[in-house]
Image (cartoon, rainbow, N blue to C red):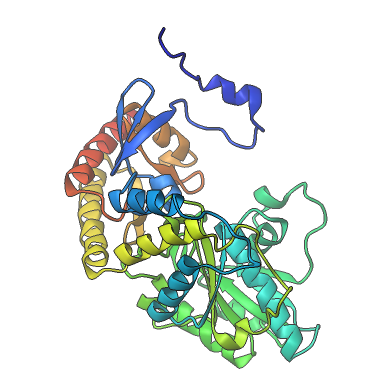
Length: 403
């Protein structure tokens, strides 16, 4: 008797309607390809929204998952464990950080960062210093605190009064920040490359200026590297290319390679404000997740992989440029490493979802970053042949849209 397929319409019958998934249901993946229930093959330029940093079912990650899965999965934070300690040590060695807090997602990592910033300011300056400044079009998570810090109305509307002490300013506008920041400001949070906001990199002048203003007003600088980090920019973390060092950094998505994992990194001075009992995460730092994240970190921090991200960036950029010269559909192609945004021109405004659906018909997975930007975030080790084949499919999709 043939196995009955689970169909997409079951989602609408049993799931909360906060998502609108595409019509296909992938059932397996390998490298930068996935296959649906009908064995149709798709090239993956989406990477699970910059999560699948080493593609699907990377053999080393599968090996580590099996090995640790036969040892111990969970202990709770009443106890520590070897994988967590090894991973924390490596993160401290490879970054500015001196202390690490583990959790399960980018939202959790940012929640911890914002709480720590306020607690640090409370400890050192008093409760008047609690303002957090963030930037418009930013995205920092879906908890009530993190979505409020992000400040996008489409994510905050209908969830009650906004959290107090938050200010939202235009991105890459140093003059406005200079006028707004004050002795009440406990932290400024920024993405080195705005992800959901449209793949917008911070300018070097802006990034350095923000650091100087934070120092001047005794405010912490928080870098949200949930999307830009873990090798995605071509360095282990994007701050390493900017000549700026934050006080707190959040990482998730790619650091877990597909396993739910997040971390907040901080200097010791700042981290000391999280005394026993001030914050926690039931599953954060579990042995299974830390083992996988350690394996991911070992691979993505290698020179071979980071250099490869830069060369693959150039290959993608060159191919996208050729496509755009022919079809004239993008106003700009921006981003760093393997986080790219193709900005739709005036005649295509609001049609990013149309492009996503057209790509799907050509058996290519891409992303959107708002209504006017197509986002590409493939595996950091995507083979060149898959890049070339994916670009061919992308051009076919654009030809269909651009009739």
